[in-house]
Image (cartoon, rainbow, N blue to C red; front, top):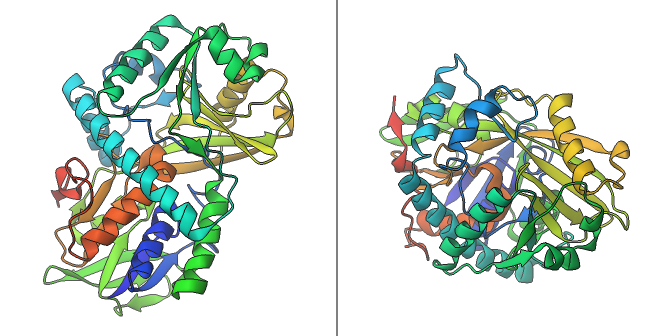
Length: 419
């Protein structure tokens, strides 16, 4: 088939790779001048396959009111007159119920474990060098209540086949000595050995180059998709800022947070809304971490990417505004200063992006009500983690095959509203 992938971020490029490898004629369209220029440019770097707990959970719910008035809170979910935000926020609150949060965690973990398997296969197939660090992720805790909750969640995940190691304070410091200087009173840690880290921007750009050179994938950059058009239950053509194109047999939606906007042009409402995240990058020193770290209390992650350290976090709902706000960056900087007070944060670079988030957590994959439109979008903070597995699932669905894992909780139809 002649297929068009909409979006050249990590999900779009991995989709193109899987489809082209299977013999399809693939074109990728993106408004930027190259691959991985938005969410896939400077994310936290973590391949956190074991991270299954969704943002919408009963542990977060009681904190939302407090965080709403706190400018540097880990999650800022404010009142808005945007009807799409109101609808998304209502669904988010409903998904904080314990049974729903547990079900969505199971979905995340199923996809995460599968994605690890596919990603390892891709690394072997492509031999791409992207600063891959396969040493797991160390989650650190500065209060007993959060630590106890995480230990209970680790027990739940162990029952599903994902085993993590609970560490006391001394064991945690032995694993990552740079934490010795932390100003926080760290009480313990959890090490997820199946996890890893790497530079998403480098990987995506190199994979795009490989797709073009080895499989003939055509990348069309600098072209903004304005609308989709449909007729008789199919996408008939796409409208861009440079005209119309009707030369494709099928389309893959991988436009991140903008997926929802484009889908509304054909009468589909999907509750994907932008969750703004921030990151900073600075030089690595002997006093910065060598492992990938997650600060559980502040929702901040650290990754060693060669001679740099990437720190990312916070979740802010501000519509489609990707402006870097100093007070949000400040929350990350203060977090670094608490855990790694000797880190050279003054010489940092800064970045913000709009993560495509669903109210229940898992992405939207597979078929749609339109026979030739497929979904691979809505991954939120886990796009890097889940990209390989999601692309493999997409390729199977396009070819009419049964994916290797159940799609329960992942299909677009679970939250779909026809306008």
